Length: 130
Length: 282
Image (cartoon, rainbow over all chains, first blue to last red; front, side, top):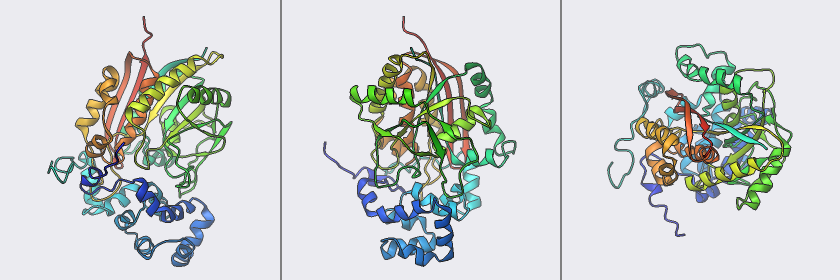
């Protein structure tokens, strides 16, 4: 079967976690998983930069983690379920983390969700503008 | 002979588990969500199933990116509760039914479904939140579980058609198990939600409600939904809905709707919940 990912890249504001991105983000996501152990969370919080240096991250991946820039982590191969270990370790909710990836404040995002969430209108396809 | 007596679908939002664990279920935000499960909990008390075949997905808890099984079946005696970054949920250990699980694994593989067999794994909110919603907060779960984990993290997940056919194979496999067991099949995850990127927060109530309608009388339409449609219409994480189709395939052609509930939002997610009863053919 032919593989054509152009449709996957046609969804506004969305990164689909393909095998290629899994390969790109392997070490970043494995670092995230290490935070499931309390002793590793403590070591990470004690000196984030040193702990990150134990993983084979690219400079962009390391900086994105230090900045807690989740969009940048995703652009560098991070997967949201792995990245969740970082904001869970930070004591931050999924909703707050999700809001940080949008152009809204945490309060605006929470209000949008209470009012039924973000409409798919106009956000289905870049090419087709629908 | 083991029998599939009912099917349940429910979302498995982690914040629902946190709300229960922190005693916030009566709050203004959460009360409407938990009310939608009151009927189900009472119904469940009268059903007393022996085993739940629980279809869910692991969220980077048991499976890292080292190995990514598309379909995996747990054959262990018990499953510890995963630490997802804030300590394990304070819920009872999940007890397996190893004998039924081994029977299912063998039957499914010989029926052309190449399951990955798991003898040890921790289970995360994907499995424990549905248990909490259906059984509340007991000291020990009143039922054994056969977990079936489906990859919906790395694209592509299995197709909806493949999932439905796996459900049909589970039905055949359960029916060929010698012991008389009351078995339920649960399909978890969904409904529309997107947790990442600038489009985070997407909810599609029109799509979700049509999906709920079709789960009852028109599953053949749902089997044909391509992945790109889930991604566009239901958000990048809404594609978890393929797991509901495993449950639906396991119930046979005709079902009776016992309960239906839909609620927006639970954190970032549209919550959908159904209880279905298979209608015996003939």
